[in-house]
Every structure is written in C-alpha cells, then in structure tokens.
Image (cartoon, rainbow, N blue to C red; front, side, top):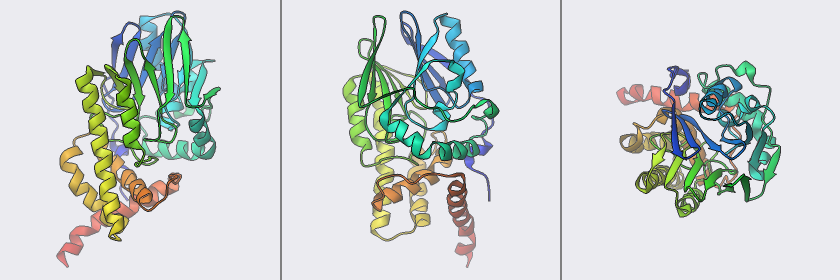
Length: 326
C-alpha cells in the first residue's frame, strides 16, 4: 500500500502574517492550517492553536514581534488535532470551544489524534511536545461575546459543516471573520467528519455576517467582499458537487470504489489544483457516501480505519489497468 498522499508532503511552507485591521492578523501557510490573532487592550486572543506546541511557537514569535501583551484566550474552531494540540504552548490561557466541540473531543478526540498524526507527519513534527488531548476550559452554547477592553469579539457556533461543532470568531466593528474550516480558499475541504446536508445553510450564515476580510481554515487571507464571496462560493460548490455525486451513486447501488472513481474524474478538472486534493478525496467520498446512505453522525476515523479505507480505494485504482487489459 502506498502511504497517504499527505505523507509525501514534507516541504516547509512559507508563512504569512498579514494585518487585516489594527491588531488583527491572519497566520497562513500556503494551505496548511491557519491561525488568527486578535490583540485587545490588555491581552491577545488566538484562533486555533496549531498541531503541536512546537508549531505554536512560530505563532507566538509572530505575536511577540507586534505586541508584548500576553495570550489569555485560545478559541478552538473545532476539535481536529491539527488545530488544537498545540494549545499547551499558550500557558494558562483560557481554552474556549463550543459545547458540540467538547462533546466530540469526549467521543473521538483520542482516535482523531492518533489518526491525524499518522496522516500528517510534517504538521506533527515535535509531536513529543504534545502533553495529551486539549480540553476546553470554557464551553459555550451557540454564541458568546468576549470584550477585550473596548474590542468586541463574537464567538459563534455557526452550524454544522466541516464538523458538528464549527465555530467562527467575528469582529463586528472591523468586519473581520476567522472562519475555521467552514470556508477554504484554494484548498480542498476535508469532509471526513462533515455534515453535507447542513453545510449550505452554514455557509449562508457565514455570508450573512457580511465580512469584508476573512481568514479561511486553509488558504491565504481574503481581502474585500469579492474575495470573501469567492471563497464561500468555492467551498459551497465543492461540497455540493461531491454530495450530489455520492447521492446519485448510492441511489444506483454503486460501490464506494465506483463512486470514488466517478468523483475523481468529475472533480479533478475543476478542483484538482487545490492543495491536499488527492489526500482529502478518499476521506471526503467515504463520508459523502455514508451521509447519502443515511448515516447522519459521522463514523469515527481511527488509524486502522484510515488504512483500510485508503488501501481499498488505492488497490481498486491500481487494479484498473489490468482490468482494462483483460
């Protein structure tokens, strides 16, 4: 079996730390998981902690270059290990998450940690510095408002999409949004734990906020309503295209392998240039097929399930030339 597509991705990415407004920064890295920084009157809030404490040190270094205020809050946009396991680097900062995100950590946090470390060796460099699962110390239901002095920060469980707990951080006065993985730009949405049926309404809620600058989960910071709308529309198109293929395949009684082949052929011309396309698609198709079959609650990805799924799809793909010759 060949390794996950992501295991061959070992090249360092160029980090950008872009000011989106006074004291508001997007930390982006060529399609790697993004973080956000909000500097208040007396302290700093970070959106998404990075994969390991070692990786988080670069975020802290960028913050230290623009302010000497301490990081007192870290918001988790959702539960995935690449977003949360670096949280211990921020000392005794309050870790904020939606109640749905905490429930998912309880249910599947350890399996997700083990699974993601196997998928993304580069992002988990320094994994020995991870003390264990990241647990929120402040949990909210639906939405909360945090005042960093005069700066209003709205933290909103915006709806189910990438996961059931997806949370965005919204600066209403500045019209800056840290969207987590509800929105991607130039990067393939990972849908292995997604809720395809709900994703369009969640994106509509994101759009209704009226952001003029947006940091997606992956991809560069977006400046202006045109770029923001483009990212939202691109995410909507990818997820709806994929789910339509899965629903049509399930209705015809097609196998997972058959639906995967159709999806890859149909979607590569439009989306294949987006980062992590080849890595995400097996997971995305697997979840889309499950949801099309009526499995509303995403099945837990374990390291073992990762390998079994990848092997089944990769072996089917490898066998195709031989079948064609017979």
